[in-house]
Length: 168
Image: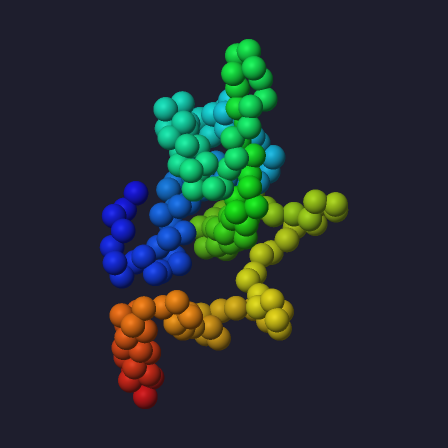
């Protein structure tokens, strides 16, 4: 975990990376989104050391992405069930798969997203919910939200001024 630097505490990207950005966390979430729930399933799927898996599952549970549920009394065994917050990570995992398939797989993709019912491959894109238009770096920017501090508003204004000065 990175220290919480004041300018980063308002940044949604920094907050998300702090919660799910660690290598194993994303892979655990990927597997959970495909139905795995038990410690031994994650361990077998990922080849992760048990102590590392324990730490990551503890962090993801404390962060509210998993709910830990007892499924066996003797011996005591728990499963890790995604919460709504955990299921909401799905678009992030989908975006990572799409990015990797487009830019990091020159020989071809080894894993594709597919429609559950038909098996038809899916190419993920991010769209605006209101217009259904693709969201791209060319047509979207970040602006201050209602709870933004004055410091954040000033940094965004300075960034916008610098960008506009370069576009002339």
